[in-house]
Image (cartoon, rainbow, N blue to C red; front, side):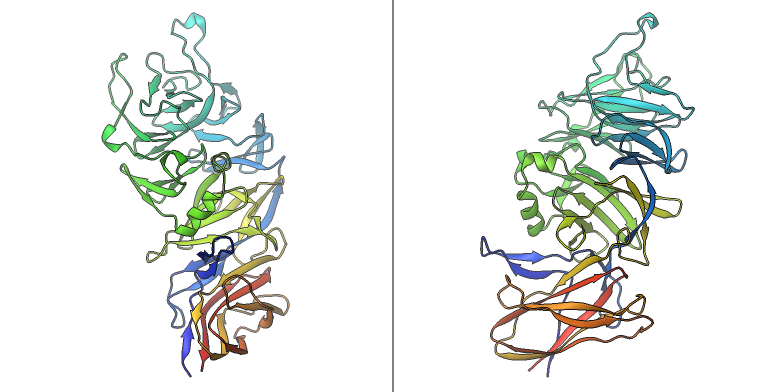
Length: 471
């Protein structure tokens, strides 16, 4: 009887509204491209989260300060330095953060606040009238970044951005602080730095600026690099992240249906699959503009994480042969993963929370989130098995690290829409390191069939080598 190998990295289903085929993405499972037991790779559960400490509210932003080698976080109405309360931050909206050798800057409510390491707090403002320097229209600060020895801020609702002075970063440059992104008349949405460039994101274009190096007080500090202009726009202020050696962003609807792109040296490449673009298209432009994008790296995974209202999407560039996406969630239903603002500090990953005032740390020996069991889902593609009898559905599992005996749930679909009754299969017990996971008798199949594997556990999950016999 022939043995059929079934991949688990992406399943096949159907959309009942359009009768179109769709990808069924793994939930809370990451693919590892390492050959093991004859398989090309295996799937591993996303790390669990252990409680670290309480904070004053949901997470609003994080910045790893390379000067002090600590993470600065804004949670609730406070600024924390490696978990220690430093100062207050007004409002409750998402913040932009940057740092220099003298201060940590936070932009919120249209104002850039500068928290100096000596304890003083300043805001971005014009020079005093008696200084003799001109006054400029600073405007409402929408986004900030740090380039060389200056902070860069975006004037909300305009196509202008400004740079601070070299000697006093709480004031604009004395002679030449304001610059214009001329290809973005509807206003700059976001900014960031890449290598030695300052990048301005609009709704239709992305413009690169480079430093001139001129010492003439009347000469411009930054000039646009028109040959690096990207004909794509960004959806929102926080819809961007430094990823690998590129910048990832969610595109604006002005350039077509939203997608996820990487830009490098003025070139844009889409990394979104058809299924990911369909998920993005289900959101309105206002909803996508509130998305948050971030990147982390651990254990060979290069992850790009996109936080939407009802989804948390995760892309892994470590799998060179395919565009590997998965979905991260919290709980036993379809609630999006509550962790946000991932940061590596003190030899561990710390995370904030979208809903509650708490900080957590990654736990690689668990898949639980704050002590609660989590659901993990894997799907196989549908395959033809005309009038065949199926036996011995097997999974290779790394077991024995749980505190109690557990079962996983396997169900089948013949139409790609509805899954039948779940079969409970023992898959793990304490100190049983060679547990065999097998569903011995499946039955006769009229035409097509696909499978779903569901696990609810607090233990780490490692699965590979999905196969069955047919006759």
